[in-house]
Image 1: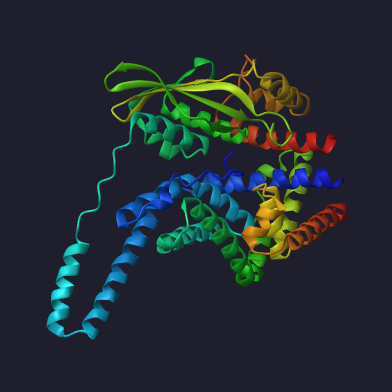
Image 2: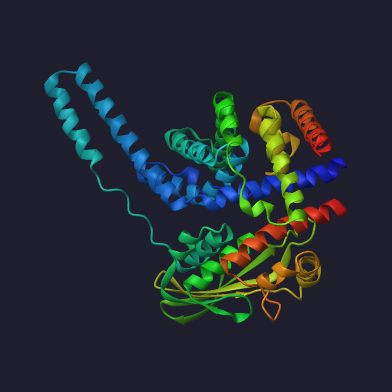
Length: 261
Length: 184
């Protein structure tokens, strides 16, 4: 095995292991824990400072000082500036890019209009399944800045958010990234009410370079699994069983192709 | 993409004050937490430990917030804190964890197909050998092949010379190659 081959395999193994850990963490919950922890530390630190002041000064003076400081500590936090519509669109895409689904969902309105590739309509459960499949298939989205397309109503703005992507091991195999795709995100009253993935795959070489070769490899090596992974039209199936197979076979495909190089 | 890039701290480092600091740390957390958990998971042997290391890195950043040079220093601080904590963790906990890991049953999925099993076995072996490398070699390989850092960047992160980085990378790769060649 050449050094270059070993380096490629090493990169793939590290990437997969890290992705596995990242997919299991819960950023929102951990952030809440951090804020609770740092808030507690601040309170403790202030208490120690006050004790020092009491020791160093006369009791009466210290008590006055303590009361004044306590009053300052109890001041309300500075208000956080409200998030703007374009920030909502950008933050939604950023959360999606790292597969932080709870964070992405936090931007949804009560009943968002979600459309996946090929204008496929999905409810939130279907959207989650689609994201799980995307992650399993190694899709990595690198979003650009969202730009306003139109103002539908005073509180309803539609944004176009271009992105480039890698998928099915294209990055590990030295292909891509693939451009030309856009998320169309509509924001109303600070929430995403619609999001459509205008996924480009024929104009940018992705279909020829990545999708078709992988499909052919699966059909040749795992014909029974291919029936689970693809529907009758050759589109991906996003059930849990299928998604697990995509994850396994994309990894195997990349490893096999690297071994051939 | 997320794991190899270093998005800037979006001006967070310039903010002063309790609520400003909390807001800025929160922004950094949302932007970098998952990436750092991924990085830490490559430097220690257990995912929960990796999560704890990242958590402590952010808590440390919170405490040192007013000493940061500029906004970009926050991300550098977090990367370095995670790498160093990973090293400390391995120094103190490796023997126990290594013993536990061998008792962990293999996933049934991994043995589903013969060909797939071979590929996964090789990947598993590679990962196992990475876990047995001296901590400095492991750090250098992770920073080089996961974060895609240059020798100069790795030298800065680990606070060692570029020559030392090259030496550890070379020895680490050689160890991996020997292990793969020796495997059946």
